[in-house]
Length: 203
Picture 1 (cartoon, rainbow, N blue to C red):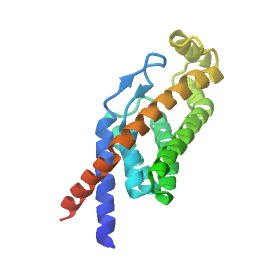
Picture 2 (cartoon, rainbow, N blue to C red):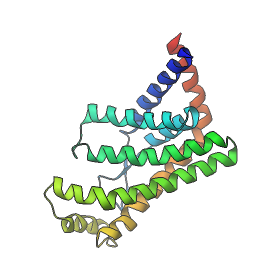
Picture 3 (cartoon, rainbow, N blue to C red):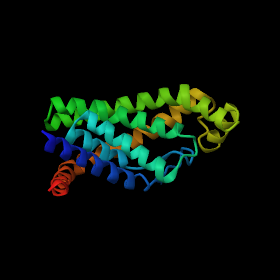
């Protein structure tokens, strides 16, 4: 029992470390401000959740965020990192929980779609009610100014609601689809590699 727990902790640590490294490889998108960037670290978090369970996936996301805060710091006083943790957890927990009960090919497809829906929904809520007002306060800038900056990139954005509809939701849809597709492509191979590595660590 103690050995299996140790192996699981080692596996979570490995997944978190890999996700942390991958999180630095970011791709900007043309229709969103430069603080929104596409990266694939949540694919590793999803694999962790599928392989070890939803709580382990959530722990992987938390450790990844803590590592990034410790190494890189935060320009948003941790607020953006907290939001990233919440949104990442919204992807991994429902996906991994569903897949844990339905371990079939069809089940994993439904799982990632469920997680994607939860991720987009929570990102919209968090941005609308928390992040936009909080960023306005933290950086002493009016919400209208924030909207005007985004409007210069995406003319469809004219207020807080259109910012959510035409920036936040499309960005998270593209990011989520990319992450989920990458996860489905590498899940079996990656989990096999992590499994072998973790047993080597505890020998």
